[in-house]
Image 1 (cartoon, rainbow, N blue to C red):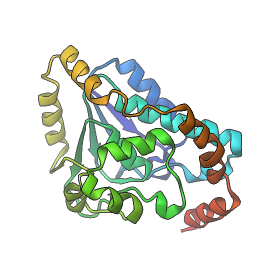
Image 2: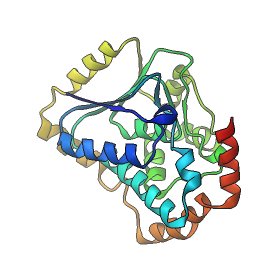
Image 3: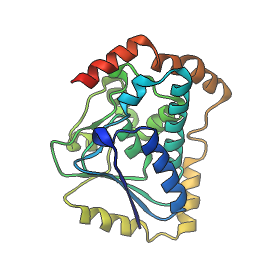
Length: 232
């Protein structure tokens, strides 16, 4: 069992360094069961907005492609992945949890979980959008994505953003140990069958991403909005 603890400034914000680290660690884990969690009192508060507002169009294209690669690496990892959501999982942090096979959350009503990208003027890149549509139950999808609210663990459980609320880290390891009993080859094959084609991005979708999504993320209007969020 391998535990990957996200550690970065801004409540484990997803910058280039952290996302690259996650991709590398998952590659090196080579199918071993993985528990993914965050350092301190947060899982991840989302993308590193300081980095986002600093990027020009080529830099943003690279950053968002890295985000997509990270989502792909987690979602299609051949072994069991368990998100131990020990604190806030907001925006990109929630995406990471959704990409994991199993999502366990600390029993703490102060924790907030959700996807607030739309409220912040952000359009999800294609793979990330496909992940969200596949993972969030149909009856909750509009509320979660369009409403953009952040939810307590009990509400997140009802909406299907998480699987279980647990009282301790020991519960997480017990859960992971049970999942890990499955033969690795059988688990990988079953997972591949479930995941096949889900994150596929067509040529047309990729062109739209370059032509429409990247410019939106680098627009002056968005940078002003994100700069205001950073001042709070």
